[in-house]
Image 1 (cartoon, rainbow, N blue to C red):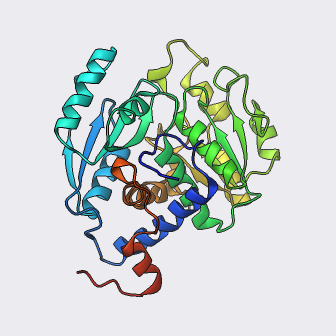
Image 2 (spheres, rainbow, N blue to C red):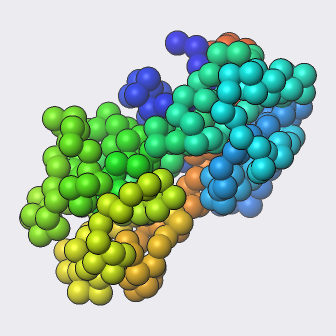
Image 3 (cartoon, rainbow, N blue to C red):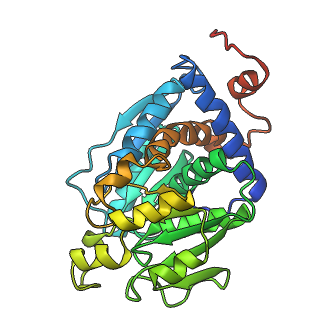
Length: 327
């Protein structure tokens, strides 16, 4: 199956997911063994098209592209907005004129990356579209979990927080289930969708959720900017009822659970300060793994639609040799 674009998780087959996770392992070995740059995408161009503010996703895509020797261009859209079909077409025409090979898109409107992908020969990567999808975040989450659980089948991940507005919850839960991981949601009734897939358990009580015996507790940022009404009484009350307090962290430590968070962290809301120093916090690991996952995605996709029939030469070399010799 040809893969020009990465727009969502639902359309990925398990074999493709496993392939990307394996590739990420190889790329991580590359840059953790002092090989900071390889010519895999030499001569290719990557356009960063971010209509929403981003630190982690934007910077990790940029670092990933540069480590693959691609040229990176940041399209200045900080003060722009795509709201009409005509403006989208104009933007696409501009991108086509730049003859870019890859376009990394983040926008508040769900479906916009797909609209661009249908009208350009460049490979389009969805870096987050509204509350819809965030596929590379899901991939790096799965990669981070697989580092701790090489065979994650049967493991349990409890996702806590603002499920309703979270593209991370949608993408990550979909991907984890494709890998055989059990997923449950916990949050205020107002922030957990009323209708969720039957395969996902739905909790509104913290103690009941912990009795489910999760292996990983995944906290979501409370997205105030997406909430046009008050979904809970106060931030302080949210932390008390659904956050990881100092007392709850002690319980989590006793049970040996891992903690994850996609960032940025709202301290005193989703978690207390001590979580950042917890020995089984994987938050820093997620940031680091974002680079290798995005290297794997960029290397895998083929602008124009040609399917890469074999893995990257550099990733394959890393798997079979202890030392990579740069050309």
